[in-house]
Image (cartoon, rainbow, N blue to C red; front, side, top):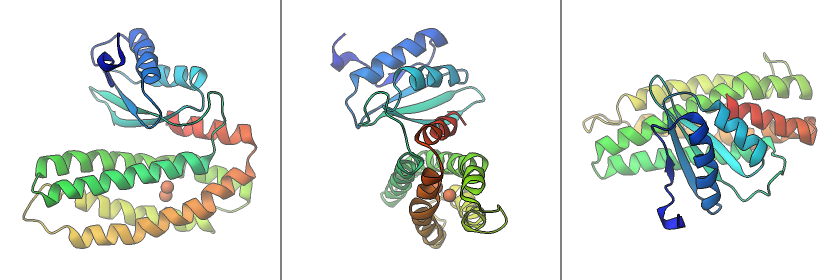
Length: 230
Ligand SMILES: [Fe+2]
Ligand SMILES: [Fe+2]
């Protein structure tokens, strides 16, 4: 099979063991900076485990749909060396950039009157941002609080959790209106940007590096692996 014939999408309709090996083949055929989309009718945890063992440090794992009928994941090939250890700051700042790009794409589509595309892309953005907030609150912040010595009721993560509520409120309202050409979502979008922009900067300047500093290299890498698996 030449690289031109190698699909960037693997599945649907493949048994999981076949999907696993096809996913690795398709991933290896992509250069850094590109991604492979995996589509299955059941969760892809076994495929993630395989990547974490056999392509360690080389990929970002981004679920974009989770059931009830379809599970879909984007496996992005990064420039990391095989076997290299991940940091929280690197992995989660990358996800901020990915989400920002999706949000911009959705509004570009709305701007040119393509409401179906705007809705479809915003749905992927909203799924990704909700998942991002969930892994921060369930996995990252407790680790930061325990290791850097802050309580969950006070300090940087308490502010981050409050901002997450504001972000989710704006997100839900935009999600329900972006596909309606007659609705005005510009002020909601502005409200989302004004909280999300500073929020992400504070995480990238304080919470992510603070967590990385408080953990050993192996602990950081294990935390990124747990975040991928959430
Ligand atoms: Fe956050
Ligand atoms: Fe974040």
